[in-house]
Length: 603
Image 1 (spheres, rainbow, N blue to C red):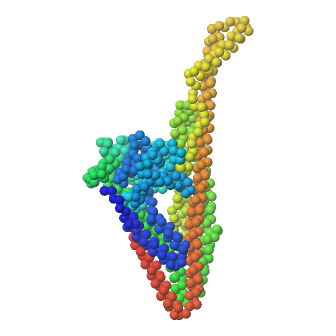
Image 2: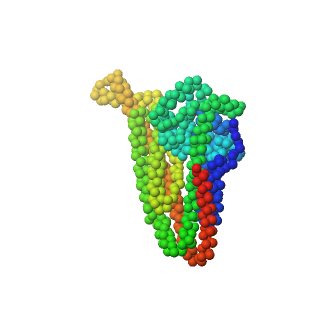
Image 3: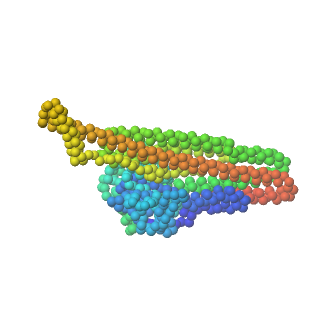
């Protein structure tokens, strides 16, 4: 039930696509087009490591790690009743089991570890490490992973209402599919429903997995309630499963027990709908690259053949090619429409994203001030801090959502403007994960949260009482009066009043310090997130610029060679023209055959 042998090429479709791409690379190298060879080499790398991510998310202690283990028939993700997963675990294919720690950096740094040591690095205790890892990459010889599937077990520390939700949503935004995990102990909570709906907006290929059905007899009622909650919105199926039964079925190779575990439906979703669909998309994209390369090489031969077949058309063909070359030259210019659209769009987007972030942070500060004014920070600061971190995470993710949506719109505009002159196809953009930036901002309250203790209150009251008794006794003596007990009563009243005034003063001070702490934290978040947003936009700008500049250079080289070939063709003799036409027809036939193979892979 747990296969370990990897099929050749990962999958039949990817293997066929790989062979077609390799033939395209041979053709472009033979025609002395290293630029086109590099383009196909990038497509080949994507085919070799497709990276189809299935993200397992949910509140802590819902059985995410157990689900990931049961899905693959392994035991590498730590499962514990007392501790939760603190860093993401990436389960991908490898001929031999191995594990690596992933650390932040440019480029990211990796360190190999023993498989048995994974638990020490992915649970809550990782927070005490000198340099906590960004994640753990585990390679396993499993057929389910062979086509490039990557199962991501996300952190559960803090739950969906904490800042860790930002990390989960960031992972969702880059996922090909999402397995939202909730156990059968109760129906979906309001927090889970809200999180699930946001996840579906980012990744439509989402299912709700109901775990621990072997432990809760009323799981069918919970399933029906969850389906009712999800009805009317996005069409999210609910799949009840038991990781315990699945693990036992894998050990004993019991097919009936495996069916009872509910995992066959989940496996079909992952392998067919997710992996199959992503594989088809990746293969199709690679074949489009092969087709585009063939078109550019064919354009050179067709122009030359036109002149060879009818020398009288020489002037007409050269005129047309010269006009095309001028158009391509315009595409390479900084004044090209696509280039201006890109530069202006990035500037506008940077301004809008920064304004949106400032507005959200301002709203967060106002909400925090209201909370501080309503409660005493000495009693509620821990809850306020937790709420602040969670709310900041939500605001940041909303801001990054705006950045991502607007970046997609900008890329579409640039693509349309470039397509007017070339018809090229845009590669996917990558907006990086903001959760790591948010994690580096901490709430430092720098204030005295302790209230006055009984002793301090007594001393404050005694001090005010003593001053009151002394003052009124002295006034009585000066007037020739002996106040006695009256002075004591007045002193006690002043003591109580002084105590109240001191308590009020300290409460006002604590609230002021709490508001300052909120502002320092929000300033830190705004500073770090703003910097990361600007860096992300610069990466997008460079990515788009480099992509279209490379496409424009390819077109320029193709038109230049076509113009040169057409010019040389006019000077050939009849015999040379006939021989060259035969050679060109043979080359065009091979290119046409290559395009047919590419079309067959897509079909």
